[in-house]
Length: 170
Length: 68
Image (cartoon, rainbow over all chains, first blue to last red; front, top):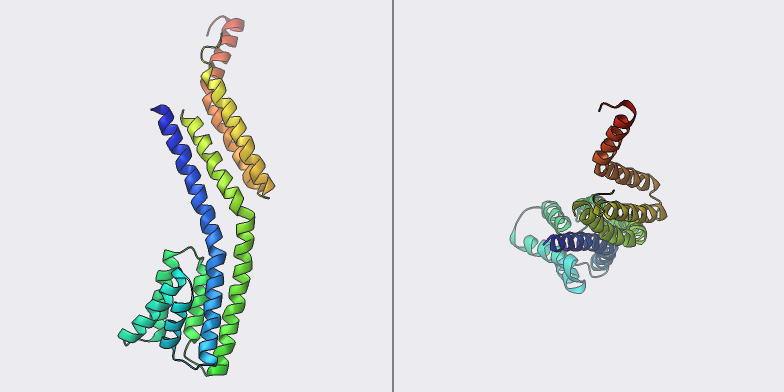
């Protein structure tokens, strides 16, 4: 029974470390998808001159799962609720960042971007998209660096912490 | 002479694992955390052997002063 408990502790902490490293891996991927979705948005606005609702709908069909849900929600809410775009964008960004592993800085970048969305003409809007892309680029580099530095450490640290606690309580 | 050997193995295990954590943290450039972990490990081991050390002092006092 004692050994069973010790194994359980080791297993749980190893798993925690593994989950954490998975989150670290996920963050740069998410930022990359966000970047490509903003690029699609730029193309939709500048070249096909689509409305935000159509653009969001198109984006949601072109990009992979967690981010596409965000754009689908925005498009649907725009269709059904007559409140301002910024309120919808703000609410959905909050909900999206709550469900995935993104830091508050990325959230702030997306919110700032949402504040400019639909307020300007095409040329200005393109500039704002470029600005958001530059910010996201910086964050992407940061996230990749974090993953490279701490990814492996977190995994082995989980296992070691588990062994440590097990020996301590034995 | 030594009543219970399991505490020795326990302390050895703690030492090995603390040393490994220290190495990993140091390798990743977190020296301050590494020092902190070592310190915490040392304190935990000290708490483990507190009773034995107090026994030892009692023993020494009874040897030299005849009244413990």
